[in-house]
Image (cartoon, rainbow, N blue to C red; front, top):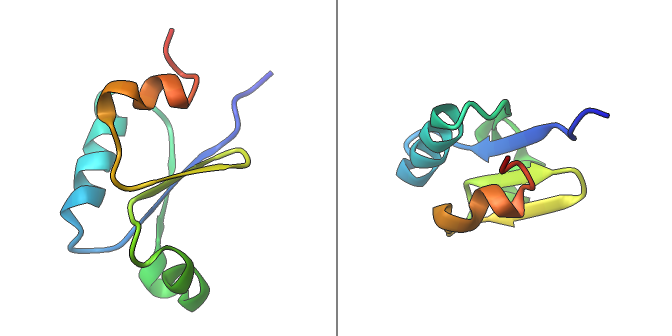
Length: 77
């Protein structure tokens, strides 16, 4: 069984988004990058809480606790 796709909702110029992207890459976690600036509905939904990680039916919003994030995503081996 494959894990649900992890989606990272971000926007340009967001240092928290950059930090989250770097964290995911450093832990070799595959994700789909979505810039909310190109979608008015996403901007309205997530504009104040980015970065947002969507994993299956769950959304994890900022601020993130990186010490527990892997456990929250059930990706820790």
